[in-house]
Length: 304
Image 1: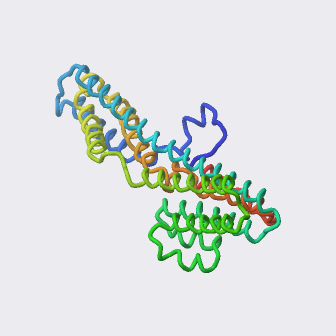
Image 2 (image 1 turned 135 degrees about the vertical axis):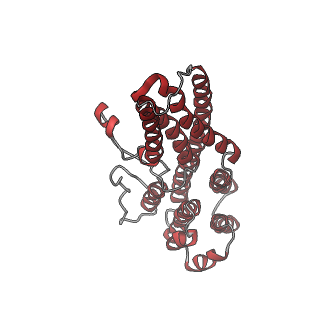
Image 3 (image 1 turned 90 degrees about the vertical axis):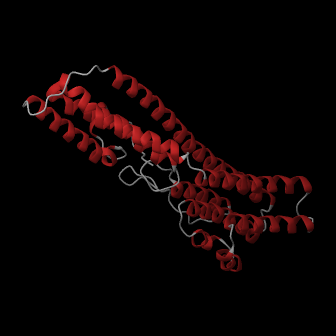
């Protein structure tokens, strides 16, 4: 995710880091070159184009911009819901750690085991969502026997939560945890499982492919036909107008593609590594450990 101070007007015009320009530049250049070729043919008399009315292109452009805006809003909703789910995971992890620390101040081994597992759950979930090895990401935070068994589990996040629940159930049977307190801690585990299910739903349910394909094809059709319709009227101004319109339409389409999958490593995706580090710092501090890692910082405005 791009994290930077609010840029000035000049910076907004020329900033490339975090911009969609690098992705759409080849397409915009292609449309501009096509428009320039048609303008040269028309002005040189080698090929004459009639002066079309702009009404059909105006209607098509308005309809296309409305549908692109709707798709962009739908993809942003997915991105924002994913961010809210990870915000909930941060809050639930802190609440779980706070209650564990208050309930078992004298049992440092138990406290550390429960809090480290919570960090391992967040690390495993982030790795799972990015398609990397979740078992390896969680290994450092789990007891040795659990870390060894985790790669064989189909649902590794659920396996970590089951180990947490087993520890809490043992405390309840031993009489060290009352029913109300057990229910409160179990509620935090259930909420963490809900976050995992919500992020998996976003990951496994993309926007309908036919809808995306229709808008993509229509944007290309409009940008390819627009120079033909305008060259008779605009002449050598056609490449500039065509490039501006292509940048707007292709840019919205490409930005929607990035927001649709919020867990990747694109510039506008969520900073999962930084969010995991936030949970790690908070829970390690609650467990009484002094050697705390530093928060992750943006590298050239990019926070992963």
